[in-house]
Length: 290
Image (cartoon, rainbow, N blue to C red):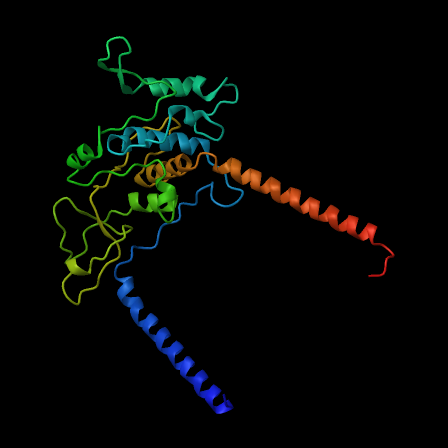
């Protein structure tokens, strides 16, 4: 192949790359129309490699979940005893075990659990115990959808891990309800949320500016003063959203902090081991030509 042939081939390649780049940039405005608003930053204490959960915030977040969210959203993977595990909202260093934690036992006793009488075989309702899972507000997904306009509320057990943005996504969504933008055609049972992903172009007049966000079936769940915090923190919508987002992030990964601490310990060990290895190498091969 001659030099001129190589030059022509390179030019052709550059033209194709430029054309592909042009198509990419041209497609960006169309994609932007279906994007949600940039997530808010909650400034959570557990973010980063050295972050840890604020125990008081977790307790407040659990209260918001129990008194507000639990009426619709399940947490099928959570047990009451998990609340008392190390790093949890109700951990007590003096407890014999998480199942024996006095606060957890009291919290579990507040709910009624569907069970079967071991003697008669009849269905009964009993007080919850630390070993029980959180009760599901609906007997099945069909009943959940029927009670919520056809959209079954998602389980929150691992919601922070299932959504890009984690706790910031939950915090943003709960505070993202706003007045319906002018011209937006919204149907009964739908609500506008600027942090909900969706393309609103088909629901706006032709040529009108398409706002960020999308439709969500859940109405705004939080109102100021909806819960009363035990530590006298003001229960604003922003505060409750941040607290419950932190709690769901912890519930999604209860051993997150322990894993971080283990990782830091491993890195320190590897650093020390690398230093010892290097010093040993220098000592063994000292004075040896190589």
